Image (cartoon, rainbow, N blue to C red; front, top):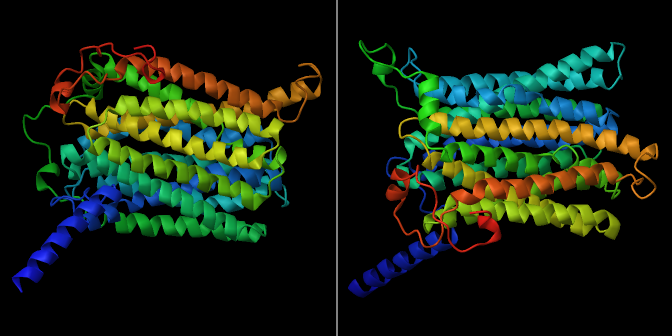
Length: 493
């Protein structure tokens, strides 16, 4: 009997090591944050991913191709949520110090974000019908309605995600936070991927009635998922209901100054802005490029969002393993940028080669490179935090990422239309007169932006010779990184 018991214990020990090795998030749970509770909390990321798949994937194709809305108008609508993006840092700061009657500081912001998401999705399908001109009402009313819907969804996304990530970092232990963030972004991509596949299947036989049903179903599911995610997550602290006499609450300006002190955080935010613009400018154009230039049907182009999500999912799993073994986040971000450069090169050459397979491979690499860059820079921003302002650090990263990405999306649509018009008039010469020239210019600009990102992030990369512990590196954030072996991901460090 003792022999059987020892054998069972040995097998259980081996299986535990096997699971931890091949399932990167098997050891992410702690006593303070069990895996079941963490997975339930991550449902808010699923709802955000569903909204992103709908706005940036399905709707932009439907509006441009099926509803015949100009690309510049579609890109402008999708870029409208960037109006609220700069406020993510303020939202994070306010949630750090919020006082409510129920003793919560994160939950009220997540709940208000959920309501805004629901409201925007609820009015969106009817505004789209008016926008298409398939009614007796003026198209202007449809444009106003769609603008309001996109604004509401965007404001809800920024508020929910910033406060939700801050709540997750509050609940996680400091050494476990990078893997918790990676898991949350895996759930974001799972939501995006599953939603993109579901939307593609439901809209394969496109009808406006189906579009209304899909968007309204997404609104209802958003409310249900976020309610489940919030249930009994944040403990009520009665001391948060009333101000403490004599308590000095820092101002946003003071907290921001402390966060960017030393210059490393500011350089990181510059890199985040350049990289986010480099990876995002194609968001509104990738599916129309596949449909117009490579002649792919609606179902196939909608699956591109799922492919990008699969690439990012693989990137988040790799990032979790990288951080588990003590990997440096700035170096991982640089690797993601290099992958992105090759990804856009593949997309550009897919047209002259006439290869849909190369195009799909490029889309997969865009997701992989962008995923590495996103999770690595977010982890780096958390490491640059001053210690007690998780919301501010996450909000600053999110504000720069969303603002730069939104501006790039809007600019991408305008550039495509302007260059295509000039090419059709023969202004650019006979060589640059093809239908793909407008798309290609955007992709070339993205490659240039990614090279600029390497320049910005290079000095932050810790060289292999720097063997200090994370605590020692955090204490020395104001000291410039030591130069070491030269490589592309360290340029120009």
